Image 1 (cartoon, one colour):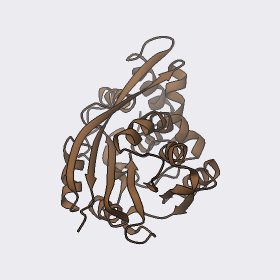
Image 2: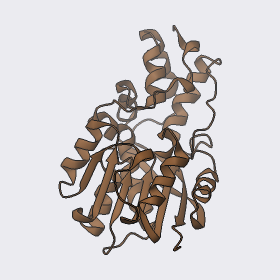
Image 3: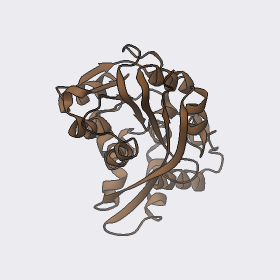
Length: 270
């Protein structure tokens, strides 16, 4: 294996350039399962206009559209291929390219603004959450969910990094990104001036047909951190990593659970 020590978790790219189909097979399965639970927690119902910030290919936005109608959904993502996929999946929605830190909507436009699994990838998470609060009506809801990466809440990724460290102990832990530790999202919503902020967690799971169904998306650079590490390995290193991860998982079909931290807050009325 070569170059392993030179690439750690902190070398992840912040931009998602992965193809939509690869993302769907990697993280999209989890995001789709999480979406209805997040929408339930945020109290999304048919008479609301809702914004999905960092929509990706549309896992949450599609769920929201099913509840409030496409015309009442807006979504935004900085990755052109993700925004295009979301627009194709819900053509009646207002889907734009852009960043959380500078939302292109007027103050008080939405009844709820939500971001699913994206806070960690914002350039400035506090500014992004502040923008979500700005475009939400007084009395409206701002909600954020982010994987519990460092607490082992996303086993799909945990198995990968456990194997990487068995092969090369010099692979260092990354400092938690925004939203990845318990309580972080609650603190950020509080700093944004939201009221009645509550925290909790959401859980989902993904069924895999077999190990190949689990492993193949890692080889397509579907995750920024895992993709950067995998790409740094030579062919022998990639094979060793695969075999090491394989030993952690059962034969045949299996299911992996996932946990995300949740925070919800209300925009002040005055």
